[in-house]
Amino acid sequence: MLIFRQLIDYQSSTYTYLLADADSREAILIDPVFEQARRDAALIGELDLKLLYTLETHVHADHITGAWLAKQRFGSEVVISKDSGAECADRYLVHGDRVEFGKRYVCARATPGHTNGCMTFVLDDETRAFTGDCLLIRGAGRTDFQQGDAATMYRSVYSQIFTLPASCLLYPGHDYRGLTATSVAEERAFNPRLGGELSETDFIGYMENLGLAHPKQIDVAVPANVKCGRPDVVESATDGPDWAPLNYTFAGIWEIGPDWVEENARSVCILDVRERDEFEGPLGHIVDALHIPLGELEHRIAELPRDRPVITVCRAGGRSARATLILKTAGIEQSANLAGGMLRWRALHFPVVGGAD
Image 1 (tube, rainbow, N blue to C red):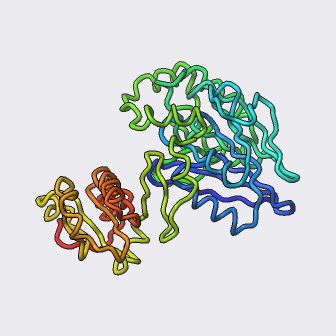
Image 2: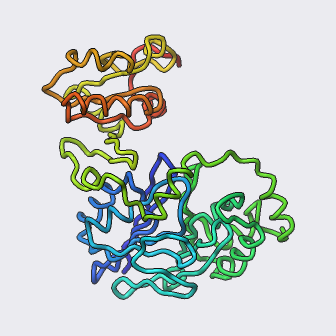
């Protein structure tokens, strides 16, 4: 029996996949995300699994992998393509290699095109395949940076993915619309870039005219992922506070999700560091939030309580991340940044004072 879980990081719309053999409890984790390492560890612990490997479908440009963190916690080996350019892995795969966990395994199929080192991992019975950024649901990964090549991707999809059984379920590395899975039959029929009667020439023309913006995280993510997500400040990443379910970002910031803050608002101090016009503006502000603009924070530290944690918030999470560092310097250790800021708070329809409908 297979244990299977699909997990998501909402910030980057990245899917992480946990697969385990129910008898031996041996497990693998595909495409873990740095900020979700605690979540993944908690699930592995609750299911009583032994994590053997973390597998990367490729060197990512839009998020930082949690492979190094998983290795520190579980002793799991980092696995990636030999053609990836990564410098840190315990095992490098070539086309046709198997990664075994208990009586189960996934087979690595080389599917370059998005990057040189892209791999699709196919479950032993070919009922599931994990396509990374090669084939997406009704789409395909970009081919305009990081060794991308549209012709190569087209051939990868047709030779290594579309040759799987029609009923094989396909699980992508990302989806930005909330879709979770597709199938070989669906994508062969309905993928607007690759399906139907579209030729390689059609696909190349489509991909060369996407006009997408440069990935926001690429300058940070790629160098970090070449090192398998090993941060510069190792101690903070592995030994974290326990007063809340915090996530540690690769930038060295402790973050907290809005759901926890909304449920525990009475037991924390919510510090809004936006300017006055923003605090009273269209996004509104969180009930009972203390307002101190970031530029004034260092000189008004005495106004903050010392008997409860401080949650910093701004529009999207950038200025409030800086605020947590100011608080730490001032000796306030129990502080965290509200992930996604007021934009995410409002998107979740949590209560605010003021603001526009």
